[in-house]
Image (cartoon, rainbow, N blue to C red; front, side, top):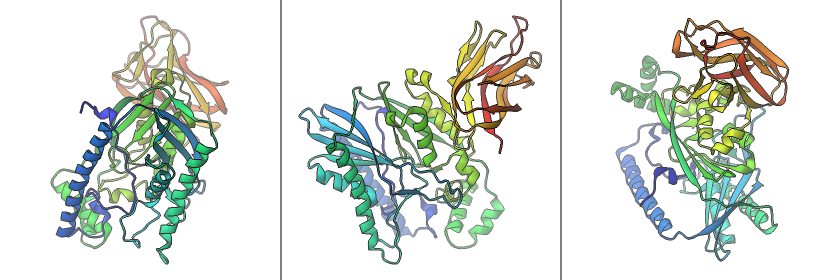
Length: 492
């Protein structure tokens, strides 16, 4: 088939009641027996051929259709990190996509919800689709002949509730049925009540990039060896990690897939790999508008949990504990948040990128990369190979459109380079009546970028422009710096 990778997306309906496909060996308390490994390999091989078969059938049976979306809400997702943050975030929105053929018949219904499919637990020794499967079944019962699909949003730190009744496991079947019914009933409400539907008039244009995500630390070999001598899940993990390290096969980073389908300039569907926490969905919806975007997690590859800075600061399972099951060396570096978000924004249409209003991240910081700024002046130029503005002279400036959600005092950092000879010139940062002045420090050369604290500013709430410019004039043949960006971190 003449299909490129960027035109194809695979979204996993992640749950805890389906067969393993073999890449989570460290989840188990003990190494799998030979027959268990063989059964897993046979299932994975069969699954692969079936997925190819169903994709080819879908391609063969395609027909011209119309697409529209509407937004409802269901409330059975709860944040499972309340013991670490009582303000636990949730995303109860239920985007629904309806596909109609030329006759006006429903060809397919797709829904998206940010929640783990973990209503069933180990007490229910059944292969079951959890609430995802129940929602699919019940939607299709309402629309005979149509196909229903359910994708999981940024729900890695969200659990279904109620769930996993250990005293009476049979109740879990009732729970999953009711959760699926909530979704199916909400779909029908949107359709039958003539809820406003947004027509998607443009065919999607696919974009796909990979960004490097890095782990923070290498594991302690002696500690691993000591733990491996015991029993249980961590011992199994330690043995597997030691085996990788002995063969020099322990990767300290991986290539993370970020995919976006842009339906013209009005709508975007985002696909993020891994188990993505809810903050990503909330941040992207705040930037792009929740009715302009659809966000799928568990897409194309499942490498590990994808936490934000806030989750990493809080600690807990999604920050580090879950990495044991994925055979990963440590938690991810905090820059994971900016890397993932900037990767998504890079794939949006140019018209949308020019209108972006930047906001606080999960931990309150405001990141202003040069690629999101607007430069004015006779000399300044954006250098994509460095992701920085260069040729920065006395009449040049950069400004960012920012919506400050958290007012207060911020520590300010610049990411820059400059030759030692050109360093020392004055700059000023201005935002809604507040300003910060300082001198450009030495970085060691034009190709040596550094990030350094340069002072504090008080930011007022609301939409505003943040401006970086020279403070005063200097010779025309001189330059201020090459600027890669600014970061504002709230003072605690």
